[in-house]
Image (cartoon, rainbow, N blue to C red):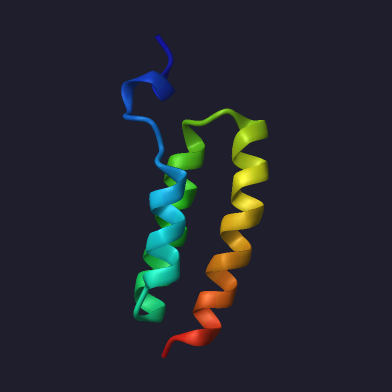
Length: 66
């Protein structure tokens, strides 16, 4: 059994919703750390494609909040 199966599936839509709703830079940075941890246990190809979208949204949100 791999480490990835020990965790519940990563809910990408929920994660992106949380990014869009982040109210502070601290929240955005916390979500970035969470993404990094989640990707450690996921398929590298999936993570690469999803993290590109997530990073774009995180960067955009970081510039919108104080």
